[in-house]
Amino acid sequence: MKLFISLFFLAFTALGCQAQNNWTHQTDVLIVGGGASGTAAAVQASRLGVDVIIAEPTTWLGGMLTAAGVAAVDGNHKMPSGIFGEFREALYRHYGGPSKVATGWVSNTLFEPHVGDSILKAMVNAEKGINVLYLHQFKRAIMDGDRIIGAEFEDASGKIVRIGAKIVIEGTEYGDLIASAGATYDTGMETFAETGEPGAPEEKVDFVQDLTYVAILKDYGKGQDKTIPKPEPYNTEAFDCMCAQVCAVKTEGLIDCQQMLNYGKLPNNKYMINWPNKGNDYYLDILEMSPAEREEALKAVKNHTLAWIYFLQTRGNFKHIGLATDEFGTDDHLALIPYIRESRRIQGKIRLQLQDILDPYANAQRPYYQFGIAVGDYPVDHHRKVNPVPRQIEFPPIPSYNVPYGVMIPNSIKGLIVAEKSISVTNVVNGTTRLQPVVLGLGQAAGAAAALSIKNSVELSELPIRLLQQTLIDASVWIMPYFDVKPNEPEFGAIMRVGAAGLMRGEGRPVAWANETLFKPDSIASIKDFLFFLNAMGVESDLDTRQNLSYERVIRELENLTGENISRTQPNESLLTRRQLAVLIDLIIKPFNRNVLSMWD
Image (cartoon, rainbow, N blue to C red; front, side, top):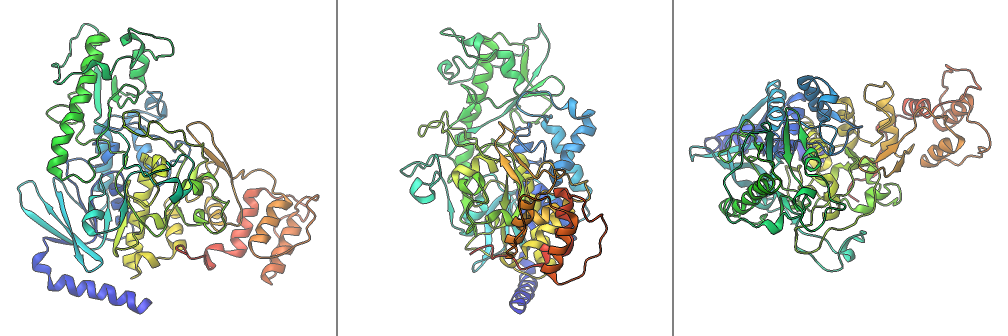
């Protein structure tokens, strides 16, 4: 296998030399789309010493996080993992601390989109190996059999640009690269017969989630009139009763209009308009449209948002609240791109289903949590209120969870890593993996995997999962969703490793909009904890569960297990915390040096 893989990389180099006159650029890693995941992938790959090109169709970085205007972070407030944590810290520094970005009630972290873009650009510019090609529209994948070797773009002048790469990362908003590459993918909702998921329909439903064209409004002060021209067409029925003051029929149970605006209140008296209830969500399935068809179809989506604003200004008497003209730099002052909640989803080596995150430990045949590379804590949240069918669906509450590496690796295409919202998950699970912190985490993992694949001359599907996970742990990434263990704690790596190896477990629980999995590191370790570890190692023991777990007993059992003498560093009868037990297990057993179950079988 090693010989075959090395020959592949030699063959790629030879191919590149033969075709070098056809390539406009060549690089180690090509990222198609500088969205949230694409930007994170570039930063992480560059930090691992490979050259990266991002080809981005707009002039911004960050995708839904910035260019789409969704500048209110959903989830992971207690798990600011990796590059997401770096981004959030930069926001804190810019605005003056956490309280300065906790301005709206939908999120703990809200910011002006242009500030987010500038931070991401600064992060990219700080890395020597990244070249960003803005205003490059993706045209097609360049294939050599079942291997992707590059992609073709059109730049702002209309020139065709061909970029060759050893690894290509899918970071588009729609999953356009995977479609062009010929990868198998899904759209719409899987049936209950296919997945057995709670909430899945009995029959195939092709409808996707609603999308939104976000606007950023600004309070210009009482007495100012910022009323926009009346959009055409203009249908007031779509917005009746979106808040109490604009509802002639009833007000009971309706939110106050100012409180509605405060939902997405940003710093500097601005408001993110991404309102789902009689708001500016819009149903439009544009995944399989051409770029020109999308541009035409999206005019109606923009008009819908403008009509919502006009309705608020005229019927709600909010004339002083107008479009912010200092955000996106677009002619209509709307976001650069629409907020796409659901894109094409590859059929990958692993498909993550709702059951896998409801209880990751329940199915011993699918221990996908052991291959985690990103974490999330947001509920399954679908926007389907405008969607013709089905209407809003109630999904069961979930704990926090992790996402396995295999969701990013296509079944049918070599040399391709899939990130953003096109990973191999069901339609139901997409309702939580689509959120910004998870997507940033997926991008960081994609960048690490690409770099490690190149540096170790190994196919992406053969990349040792423990090598990838340790690389991410070293980058302050949670690979297990234990929010009560932080990367700045010296035991963080040990706890991540024993958790991912299935030697100690956390306890998951749904908690409103910030679900949790607790490791309880400072609670006293029990005999049951140690028996679980021994069982996971295939060892039977007669430990009495009614006794306390002493340090001496742990050391003796570990000596019996390993056949080695272990030096004592604590009083024999002292009790261990779960944190200390994890460190001992990690130190003596070295779980990341052990064979791991196949990720794909």
